[in-house]
Amino acid sequence: MYAKNETQVSYNCLLSIVDTLRKDYCLVGGWAIYYLVNERYRGERKRDYLGSRDIDIGVPDLATLKALDAFLVREMRFEQLSFRYVKYFGYDTGEEVAPERAKDIPQYMLIPLFVDVMIPLFFNGVKEAVGFVPPDEPILRKVFGDESNRTTVRIGGHDVPVPTPAMVLSMKLNSVGNRTKDHKRIKDICDIVALHLFTGSDREELIEQGVKHADPEKVKTIGTALHKDDYRQAAGFLGIPVDTVRSVMRKFSRTASRT
Image (cartoon, rainbow, N blue to C red; front, top):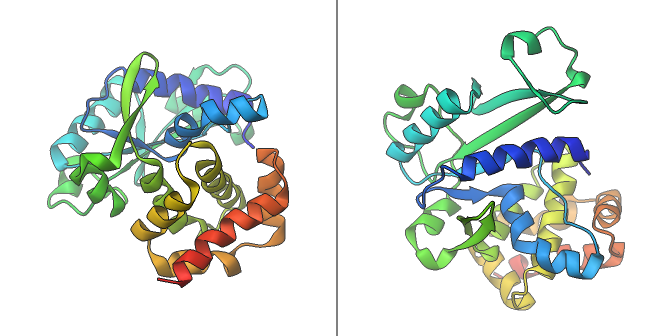
């Protein structure tokens, strides 16, 4: 789905970040899913699961957000771009490109690496503290509010907190039907199916819990929001039959319709 050099740049940066992450951070999104499913996926498919091009981090409070902002900007040399952090790398070399140089280089010759920081709800004073308002992810309230909704994965010799499969699944169920970019929608489908098939969780229980913590109205629309070509592309990236992909996705929408 993503070029190897893109995911490698993201992975290298992830390793640098987790060297500093404390337990009050939580890795979410594509890299969290990668580490939740990859061992079983690789055992069955004989290859690694899809890497991520971006890095997504959840924080529980304003103090943690301010500390992470300072780390990303001062130590990691990211720039703020709207509500995201970004820095650039050469597409062929993988070497970091200074912001002033990146402006003069064609986009196709660059890898933009984004770090997205999410908060569980709006914090008073957040814009004054970091200069922007990060997107809120309400499910993070449950992740940070109850330790049973968190687990850890091993990255670069560190135990890194991530949401449980059910919690990160619920985030993906909320987003997949609203994606406007094709590659984001297809990646969401891949992640949902992979979480269902390759975490070792009881599959029916995972469906129930994922839907329970998601927005049922959003999950109900999956059946109409996704099309056969979406399923076909996701199946190709996952290396599994398209009927399996379609069946898994429909189980979620049917379960939501019963709530």
